[in-house]
Image (cartoon, rainbow, N blue to C red; front, side, top):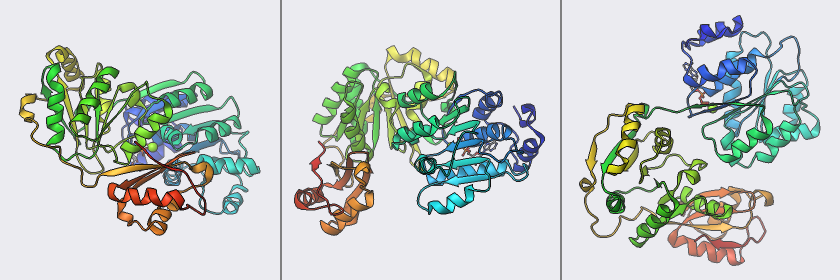
Length: 460
Ligand code: ADP
Ligand code: MG
């Protein structure tokens, strides 16, 4: 479909031609007509699929240029995204004379933003925290808002913005149009949508597996009993730091975790039976590379915000082709090719046929024996990490810099020994190279962060 078919106002039609977009991307093709018709929409598609232009066109079409009031609000997770999205809205709106788009985000003086809001604005693009600040001070008000867009909604929720978003939405007119864009659709987004959208149309654009050249996809045939050994052979002969393994059943997750752990691999597991706080610990350890291998069911894996994995393994063939695409989409670090390995038994053959049919995948299937057999001990990661949890987080105003400062400055540990520092609301997770972790732990028994004592524990 091309843009001419969209019946856009001339100013938008003209700019699209000027920008050089000729055809709509799939997410645009499906979302823009719905948005133009006034529907609430959930647009789910991978990064880079053109979601920004989709909602930008939708909201610009709805702006009454004759009225200098705030008519659209876009919330984004970070300052960088706010800037990018605002730039793109300005670009697409550049033939709308005197269109006023303002950005709102933390880290710069609020009075500067306040002044820029005084002269009439059509569109606000901001981060939830700072937007709520302005709302609280009365320097912003949303009674004239017609369209609200939650961009990268999954990331905003992961960053702990749920309550802020809810409060902001409650301050907009209930007859507004609400569009939600996200790369994933975890239950938390579903809940948000249920509360704040009216009969939303859920658009899912899957990337065809055949269009994932950045992922090396390999298939191995073996029988069910042989899968674990084949996996072990694969894992012990490659230096992979971060591997996600999918099984179709909880019991299999448990069995496999036990087996790999007995073989000396750094492994953890996640499935629906784990308590929320337990899941968070498991996830934090995997994200910060204290755990190399995470075994998961799809249900547990769906909401996981992890990308850039060295490999994704389908220990069991997924039931649906979409599931396959969704699972393997997480591998591939920036600029590096990802790796997806799938084990297929004879019984799983029909699922593979369906996958091949739907995704147009032309993949050769090799015998698992070609992976070799386990010889000796597993290759150790370059720098084994371990995780400490600090019982304090955002709510106690802890920032990553404070923790890093205490570890490198006060405890005297070299900075290259410290990995990812993840701050959550009430707890923070710090990855530290194993030899230094004891020193850090000992320091925290007496020592302080930002002048305060925090309880620190090993995350097992
Ligand atoms: P997303 O938000 O889905 O991650 P973006 O909206 O940032 O993706 O778009 C990614 C890139 O694709 C941008 O550089 C954008 O200019 C470009 N783009 C968007 N729509 C089109 C189109 N219809 N034709 C060509 N390029 C497009
Ligand atoms: Mg985007």
